[in-house]
Length: 110
Image (cartoon, rainbow, N blue to C red):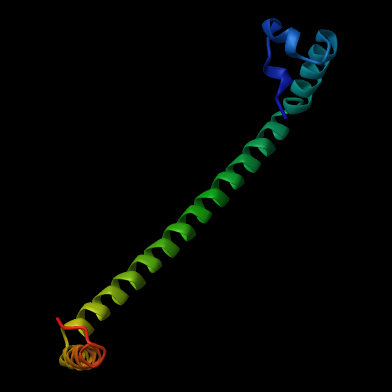
């Protein structure tokens, strides 16, 4: 929802709320907010708590991202090591051989 408190007279045409009502509401909300320094402090406390919560969420998100990246690196490295290994080369050779014989059997020549 739009915050009609912040709108000036220029926006009156687009604003469904009459000016007097808006002025009254603005005054009321300001009185509520700053009735005492204690309430102001409470508002600040709430805002700080929210900021801290957001910061913590950011940190956990970053940690998760780091973990994901590390896992990905490990996987890629393992894959590279496997591809460099003798086992992989032998398997590949065997596959190629069988493919060649299959091709020959059905009349495809390389």
